[in-house]
Amino acid sequence: MQQTDSSGPRRGEPALTLIHAAKAFGPVVALADGTIEILPGEIHALVGENGAGKSTLVKILAGLHRPDSGDFRVAGETVQFRSVGDSKEAGISVIYQEPTLFPDLTVAENIFIGRQPKGRFGLISRSAMVQEAGRLFERLGVPIDPTRIAEGLSIADQQIIEIAKAISLDAKVLVMDEPTAALSGVEVDRLFAVARSLREKGTGILFISHRFEEVFELCDRITVMRDGRYIATHQTADVSVEKIVREMVGRDIGALFPKTDAEIGGVVLDVEQLSRAGVFKNISFQVRAGEIVALAGLVGAGRTEVARAVFGIDPYDAGAITFEGRRLKARDPQAAITAGMGFVPEDRRKQGLVLELSVARNVTLTLRNKLTTAGLINGAAERRAAKDWSERLHVKAGSLEHPVSTLSGGNQQKVVLAKWLAIEPRLLIIDEPTRGIDVGTKSEVHRLISELAGRGIAILMISSELPEVLGMADRVLVMREGQIRAELNRADANPESIMHAATSSAGGTP
Ligand SMILES: Nc1ncnc2c1ncn2[C@@H]1O[C@H](COP(=O)(O)OP(=O)(O)OP(=O)(O)O)[C@@H](O)[C@H]1O
Ligand SMILES: [Mg+2]
Image 1 (cartoon, rainbow, N blue to C red):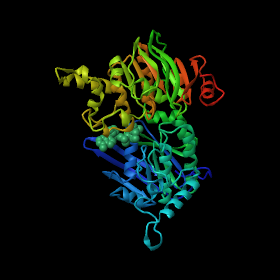
Image 2: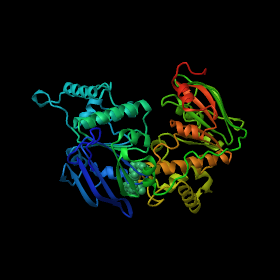
Image 3: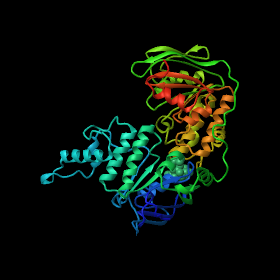
Image 4: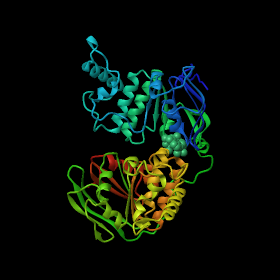
């Protein structure tokens, strides 16, 4: 599995090998055959559908889970990690999708936590710490102030800090579990540049992503998993996206973006001159029954903020929101739900789920009122609704009674979608509908959105993925710096027209 090509991985002993590792949680087999080889100086992608076992494999590498069986070697030596500390000591650094910095500590303190550089007389030297952190950021080419506190840093900066920490620990293997899911294009480019420079210096990198463009752009080799099992490893240069998808899914998948023309009816949502100082300004648009309207633009353009104001989570200073002819109260999400609005938030884990409750409970949370008579919940109806929606979205769970926290990342997202679809809203706002969702389910989600529109539901979709916007939307509103800069019909929307309005300051008039 080695190659001599100078651009690819270097010849040499693998930095890490995991062979036939298995891990079960009670009756749930999360990993049946976890197999991966990471060479020094290669970027190795791990791909697979939601629930395929990728994060479980990562947690074994990180020392968080002990495998039930299998062979695990680091630099040729068999290892048995008892803790995260053991894994770190062996030179493995793991960056999780949600960074785990201490918000009250400074950036430098976060990097050196637990092992501050000592000054003279063995005292902890703050200045040595700050200097060392400064050197790391210089090497990474990112301007982060080591003396600021971590609270309020963007996810992208937090990840860079985790990487700086990995470098300062002299990690031989860096594992990144969906690091790009919450990043903008520029931030992804920066992360890739850092990854490449680490590869240059001989670090082996394991990279997990559901975005094939990223995998094919960045990675030297690709390992595919399906249903907890190793399927194959390929040199990226020798394999096609189609082949990878076939191996991942084990079947043919339907077309992405199966847009069907729905009959477009009356106005459901009417937003007039909505403004919030410093956030968005003079936002006016309508969404009609059966129509899919996309809010496009770069991360930070104010799209999520507009959606949150429409749904009543955030306040606004001026303007009006009318829903099916009735003026909607500001700052009252319950009123929005009662009126018939659903909202699938961007950060689903934090805002969409009660992690310690069961899958079934989470799906039916929004149905509470409907399923309750005289203060009693109709348990059978609840189970039926939960089962029905979980099946429609192919939620993979050991049991619907398990806590939703035990589901894989993508499956948790499906549960949030299910929960809002279950109330059968007349307007559904979806922020990044397929982020973190695998390719098979993605087409399923697109089909579902089309089907909802076909049933006359109005859809407001925020998406940073241009193909998704172009494939799904009847109309595209492009936002930049808090204002709508262009409104494009399906026929006029193309990557150029959208990117132009999203980035150019000479773009259309607000
Ligand atoms: N602690 C746990 N208890 C019970 N089941 C678990 C636990 N951790 C993982 N699982 C199950 O193991 C399977 C694999 O999950 P894993 O998180 O490894 O998937 P993944 O490939 O990372 O998916 P995604 O792309 O959605 O992040 C899932 O079916 C999940 O529900
Ligand atoms: Mg995962």
